[in-house]
Image (cartoon, rainbow, N blue to C red):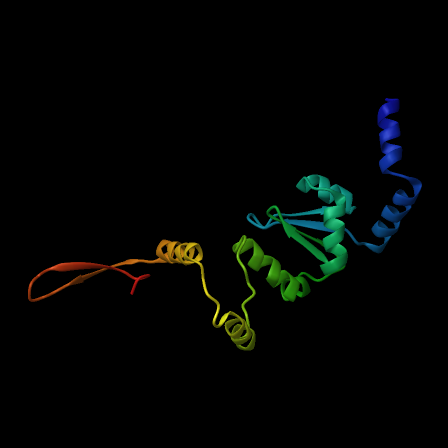
Length: 164
C-alpha cells in the first residue's frame, strides 16, 4: 500500500493536483478521438490521455504546445478549449494527414531555378563505369516492358522503356 502511495505522490505532486483542479474549474479537458471509429473520450489531464493511447506524456505535450493537437497511433488529441474546425483547417493538420497517408514519402520538390542550378553544376562531369551501371540498374528497375506487334508480319517485339 505504501508503494502505491509513494508512486501516487511521485506522479501527483501538490503542484500537478493544483493544475488539474484549475483546469477542471476552467472546463478544459483533453479530448481523444479515435480516427477510425470517430469515438471521443475526455480526460482531465494530458497524462491520462497519453496513458490511454500508450505513449509518453512528453510526446503529446510537445505536439500540443507546438500545434495544439497530436495526431498519431490512430488518435487525434486536442484540448477542449480549441475548436476542432480550427485544428482541421490548419496547415499543420493537413501536413500531419499527408505524412500519415504517405509514410516515407517526400513532399519537397526542387524549384525550376534550383533544378537549373543542379543541372549546371553537373554539366560536363564524367561518370565512372560503375556509376553508369548503377544509374542504368535503377532506371531498369523503374522501367516497363512495351510489346509492339507488327501488323504485316505479326511479329511481336519487346522493348524496355528504360533503354528507349
